[in-house]
Amino acid sequence: MRTRTQLTLAAAISCAGLLAAVGIGRGGDDGAPSSALAPPKGPYVALGDSYTAGPKIPGQHAKPAGCDRSDRNYPALVAAELGLAAAEFRDMSCSGATMADLFAPQSTDHGTNPAQLSALSASTRLVTLGIGGNDIGFSSLIKSCVTSGVLYQLENRIGDAAANEAPCRERHSSAGSDEAEVKIKAAGGRLSDVLGDIKRRAPEARTYVVGYPAILPDKGADCERAMGLAPGDVGFLRQKEQQLNAMLRDAAEAAGAVYVDTYAPSAGHDACTEAGTRWVEPLMPSAPAAPVHPNERGERGMAGAVLRAAGVSD
Image 1 (cartoon, rainbow, N blue to C red):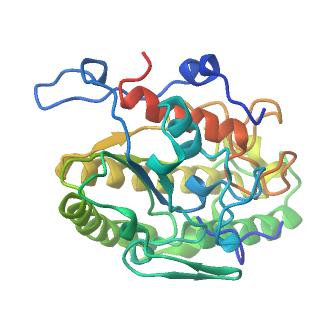
Image 2 (image 1 turned 180 degrees about the horizontal axis):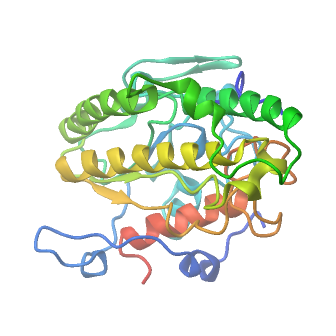
């Protein structure tokens, strides 16, 4: 998801830490879990947006600098756990990326990222893809809901507002039409094209579509201070994220790829939980991470989900 114009507001990862992270198993063609498959080896290519790149998580040394790519993001952790050499791993993820940026170069404030799919070849054996949030404008939707929430809270004392008050939902839904749902459906068609192109470029690769972790909790009142949202809009945004993840899952399964669920293992680690627990930072981060993006703990949890899906951990 975008990090530049959106919201205003060690170095060694132990094997035990990664294996402890939870994820989702993979079903093979015969319905067998992923643990029945040999773990994939390189070459490995990682594709995706800022939830993959890890903006503001140290260290930020990759090029171009405008992609805000961390060497502790989940692709780097997965590559390290698989024991891949530097030449066997290419991280093409870039903050702000949409599916169009997979096919064409992406301009950033500090350099141009090559078309992400250009890193694939017939020798590629592992691909992870985390994309879709920017295609549906999810960051802009969050920003809009925060603006609505701040105005709402000026008129209602925190704790006094009705649990179902959702001014942002009302603004983005009219005449029975939901703007986000329309965008999610359109993005699903584009994702099918992306997965087809991955198959064409890297026919021997095992592809994993990585979903988004839980950003918001089940109870809206828990997020009034941390995220500035009206109570009902917490549920509205949570529903949109779940619909986005459902689209990613359906497209992955239809294309013969594997969907990696990071939402379930991140439950209870959302942006409104305690600083020492959360995987996603709130509007005002307390750990090195972009607002409303995974911190290092979140990237580690996402890596664990990918590793489990790949049959590396139980």
